[in-house]
Length: 365
Image 1 (tube, rainbow, N blue to C red):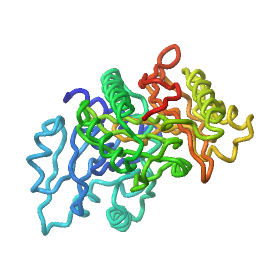
Image 2: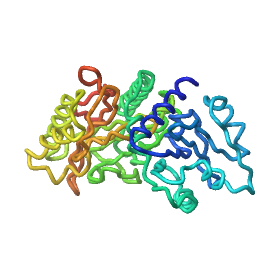
Image 3: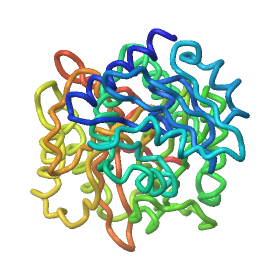
Image 4: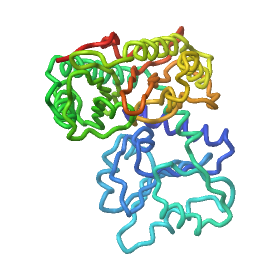
């Protein structure tokens, strides 16, 4: 474990040097957990991992959290710098910053911390560390893919269990609560979200489950996920209650074809934007361009949304180990929505689906 995290820190430092960065500052975040195996709460007391090419890495922490940092995988292998309440933590950090050059900061850093560090280092130019850290985290190793695979299997088991239950006469909120219980039952330690969007609510891609009572003839978008072994799941399926609403079959078939085409297009060497174009092209060809209102997918790992972004304009080349969602959708205001989502991972020769639950249209009670 220690060697794994030290190797990640070394790669991040090399990448920063290659990008011409003088330093990278990483606050409490999935980035810090990825690099150092340390995941403290993000508080007003600044905690900061400092990476500088040619300089040993340092982790600046509040003194009251020093024991936790010392017990982390890299705690005995990098410089731990503790500051006490009443000290000036920004002075401690800024003395370790270059007097000039580009300093990249993690995207989860509090604005108050960034502003104070900018004031203390007026000769430095500050920018986002996402191009460096996001690119590293986008490519999963074998253990990370294994964790994502287990999370996907647990999400599949959750879907199979929930569609065996009765939907008619229940509220969206009650179905969402049962999905959350099932995610935990099947191994998730945390539940991140449970979208249950019935009938016309299905036309809102991020609908929050409410007190609408589900009726026969409703299409229902189910989109849910959580964390298992620290890695995220995320899957979407669309089912109907009792009977299909008018026009549903054609739209469902269209979305299924778009999703299948996009997954089949995934392989090393193609761009993220090309996958978006494949899915969008299928839907656009049938006249539903204005009803596919979001990107085709997002990366997944320690966060449910992280690089690579499967969206028009992202020319990032796909490489083995990248994991992301493929989730085209069509949303008809006042009627229903359809979304089908699987997590996939790029392999040496193509693609592996990490969600294997049925994508056939299901009628539930």
